[in-house]
Structure formats: C-alpha cells, structure tokens
Length: 430
Image 1 (spheres, rainbow, N blue to C red):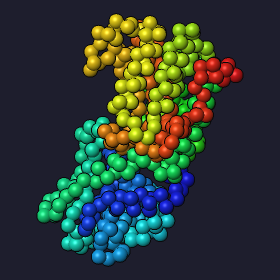
Image 2: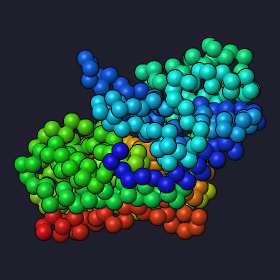
Image 3: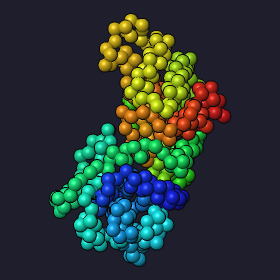
Image 4: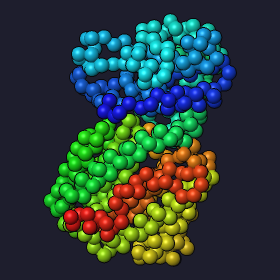
C-alpha cells in the first residue's frame, strides 16, 4: 500500500464496538472484495471492502474476518483467514500478509490460512446460534454484480440453514458514521493531499488547457503524496460542462471566459475527501460569474453552520433550500411569484440547484449513516451547494468537508484550501 501504517488500536477498538452490539452467542463474518476481471487476463485494480478494512485494517484480497465474542475457545473470539503467501507469490504478485504481519496490522492473534476455513468454521457453527451476514444496504446502492460477500452468504445459508441469520449493516451504519479521532486524522490527510493538488492546478489552468490535463495534474500530485488515487471519478467541467452534475468525460478544451468546475478528492488509506472548487479559465471572474460564485459561497457557509449535534438531515435540507431561494431571487433567476406558486415537492430553487447539500463521508465517499437519525458529534459531512445556469454556460458548486463537534460550529477539514473568489484570482495571477 502507498499509505503509511495505521495504528492497529483503531481496528481493535472498532471490533470491540461491533462485538458489543452483537446478540449473545453470535458470530459475524466479513469478506474481502473480489479482484474484478476486465477481459482476457486483465483485471481492475483491487479495492478492499470497506467493512472488513474498518474492522481489521486488512487490505488484500481473499481474506475473511470472523468475530465470535462468546466462543468457547479464547483463540476463536476473533480470527482472520488469509490467502497463504509463499516465495512464488511474492515474486509474481508482491508480498502478502504473513501471520506475523497480520497480527501487527490488525491486533488479531488467531490467523489461519484460507484453506482451513471450512474445517474451522464448521466447529464455530456448531457452537453459535446466530450469524451476522454483511449485505450492502446503503441508501444509494444499486448492485448488478454478485460480490464475493454475496456468494459467501448464499453458500453459508445453504450449508447451515438451521441457524438464525442477522444483519451486520444496522450496526455498521451507526458505528461507521461516527468517526474515531484517528479516522478523522486520516480524512484530514486525504484533504491535505487534495489541497496540494488544487494549489498545483491553480498555477496550471489557462485558456487552451484540456480538462483531462487538469485531471492529470491532480493525479500526479495525489500519487506523489501517497494517496491511493482519486476517491471517486473526478469531474472537471469547463463552461457548459459544469452544468452536467456527473460530467466525467473531462475531454474538452477550456476556453477564455469560462469557469471550470473541479469536483475532485484524494483517497488516503481508503479514506475519502470530497472537494469542489470553481476557477476562471482566464484567471479573473466576470462580475456576473463572481456574483453567482459569492451567492453559492454564502449558501455554503450558512449551511455549514447548521451541522450541529441533534440537527435533522431532512429538515436541514429544507432550511438550505430557503437560503438558496433567497440567493436565486437576488440573482434574478427566480421571482417571489415563482416561489409563491412552487410545487412543494419540487420547489422553485430546484431549477438551478437540483441536488442535495450534504452527505456522510469517510471510508466511502457517500459513507454510511442513517439519515433519519439526528446528527452526532464525530460525523463528517460534505457541504456542497451549487447554482447551474445552462443558458449562461455557467455552473458553480463549492464544497468542503466538515466534522460535527460536541459543541459549537463544525470543524472544516478544508479550511486552508482557497475558496474566496478574490484569493483564487490572486493565486492564479501569481
């Protein structure tokens, strides 16, 4: 891995929190992701399943974690099953976890090779009454590929149909949404790397530069600072392209007078950052562009101030809509009459700001969190309002990542990244 070693105490604590929520005499199983094929002998780069990483720190394929707090044998309270490594694998694929290295990484003392799994697991299943299985229940999930976890669950329930099966997700959704200080430090590092990329790009942007060249500048800076790469597919849209919310082609040339929307974030140690900034191709905003920019910035700042303990996510978005409505009226984009006659299910402001303002962020860019429950200290949210005016070839979105505090205003993990229009112009001028 490119990232520096993580203190195993984080994973020890995460497992303890999960175990404390389990029903008596239950075990839980978590699988690594597959390495997905492309064609012939080509594969996609491996990306670890975030749940097994959260609970163990293991970042390699063909790994299984079992947690069994009430196991009769002490050595079976938590176990890892890993792909056996050898000199041949080390030469062709690189070093894999040894049993000793696995303990250093995870704090788990009992480590078996994967070929021993069915034998050991049979013993465990004769002792456990309940089994926690791990299915993807994220509110944005759309799954069309059978995962390694799904294949395991199918095998498990066919082989052991008499057990009671429980869901890991309700536990993980709550645990993962509230970050430990060490997790926040890892997200902060991802944000710091993102800042380096953005500052690099400020000195690179000019008329005639292609969107993909800007993407390349970010990639260069991210990788040279130990990032895994991009936390998500980057959006680099100049002019009209900035009005396409999920524009990822990044293949057009940036023209004089346009504004470039850059929605990018580095991923460090599997933790995501999520930044959006908009900069003028020529190095200077037009008065109209600056008016729209500053309107979005005011919405962002007011929205961020509402990320406090106890706030309700849905009500929060209603309040942000009111703030955006005020700004759009000020820009002459909608009128008081539009607001008076609006459809409550699709308010007038949605014509120019059609997406949500905030989502959880952490190991996933759209991270775990139950949106019907109040905000808590330690949750990390994006704040990303935008105004999109296709008829003006202008889209402005501004986004930072915030940690909710026990008291007072949230902490902005991206506070050092330039965002004021005047500062961006000054930096581009240099």
